[in-house]
Length: 403
Image (tube, rainbow, N blue to C red; front, side, top):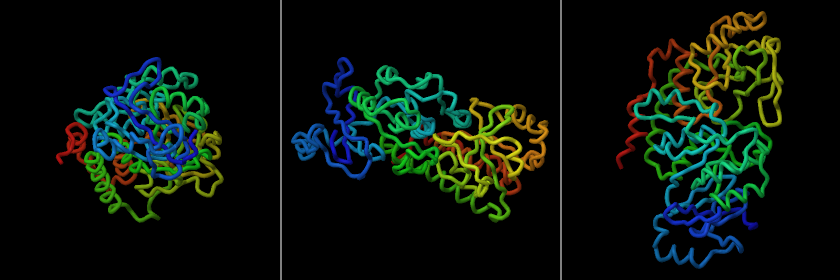
């Protein structure tokens, strides 16, 4: 393996390469180390780590390199593209939501677990849809390499450490095999920031979204959606009550008819909590000694512990796909109201038990979540039904943006 901290990959398209027996024969895929390190890289030879003459000649003469571009993202480093990838293997739903937002949802081929992808928000956007069942589920009592060969994607939109450290499914040799025989990896686990193994740079939701926009060369779409987001955030925050008048919240995973809860730390960072931060909700677990769910901490709390903390509001997550507010009321809230301890919670008595939203929250999720919680927590300040224009957003996704 090259000792350099930066790497270069070329993503050949199906037009430029010939594959035989899982080995890339043409197209110049260059392998490198998985350390992110320096964000700038120089084209290197796979064996020596030095610039190749063919790379220099292509750059200097301005032939095929005129169409090439590179994207740098830790922990992998720099990946160079000859063209936009036509097929992509994502891992978590936040990145698929980014692809849908950029008009490239049809390029998505995979997901680690179909039930974790919430798509009900697409129903409000004319012409926008995604069927999770069309995506190859990578998890099946573990994560094998066979689906990666079967999908044969141009790019794996996956943080490689999700496979080696989060799920502990692969080792370094497995990563090198799939990267060398199929396609490179790029991506960063962004949904939470509580894992000790993630000791490299994190990205905010929109920082990661911008990287995906670079991959698909969709800067205009990204900026248009970001403008909708920024305008709505500014409007919402200008109308929020003073910080002391906002409720605290306990964010937990409880499932249906919950008897115990896995706590999340609302005060922590991560893309799945950015909409809560927009609304300035404080963490009910702050100063209580309750830690957040992570790879190494799978602790749970019961109703008695929750009652000791007695949060102003509860945000309860569950993994079942497509449950409506009515379903949630029946499966979760009603159970709490009838529970001998749960019924004593202030949040239950004051009708402040809300759905906790998706764990893997992309930019479209984020827009709908900001609106949901603004109107749910502060109905007297956000009485209108919609805080952003669905037609405008759908048009950006389906038709693009005029340059």
